[in-house]
Length: 311
Image (tube, rainbow, N blue to C red):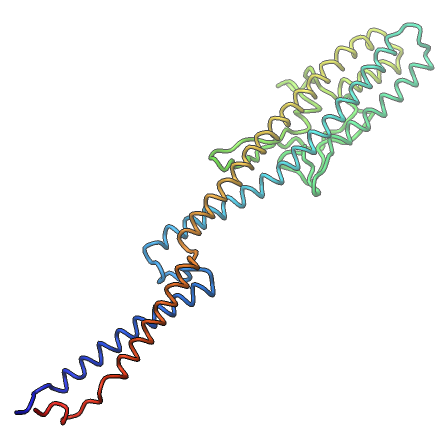
């Protein structure tokens, strides 16, 4: 009696064996790739259902990194402004002392002239502070930060010439959402004006120049009035410094949040794309063992021919 196993059955068996080998080799290849690169998602085909989420997380991280970088720059600006305003307040303290000396009726005309010269030095330093720069940018010049807003001119009514009056419209992006302003202009800080363009109370440049002029003219009434102006100007500078102190605190909090958020995003991205080295190593070992066993089993099978199926 002759057994009737067809050639088709032999071909099907071989195909199953080869398909199994291919699957094992594919797992070996994937495990090797993960161990080598440290990634389980290197290309979109590795996890097509996760790609959109992964790309969004990467975009969020890139944006957060940029926000953090911007915060770093603005923190530098705010610290420079805070320092400059601290120096400006000290200058106004000096001006207060000079005004008090000038109000003393026992001062001679010569001594008043000397006091006026000292006030002029204060004015020069104050204008220099209004021109404070960080990385080549004038931090009190608003949106036109490539040039100063004021220059010294003791012949002018306020002792300065205004070169620009650009507003500070730039906003800082907060990583938690929203934006906030982080700058004041030189006009807001040193040369505040009323809506009609006249000097407002607290105008630093005007207060100093009025004091200098009154001292030069031996004008006791003017010196007394200048003392009040100097006091208002000092208050204005303290208010501006408080503004920058609040900005520094807000930037610090925003930076802390950005750092924490970056850690969160890194963890989420890693959960999707990073390989589990232990699992990959175990998979590689198991798959190699399976492959070796498959070939050994296949090698023990007898060579098939027509005579094998003769009964």
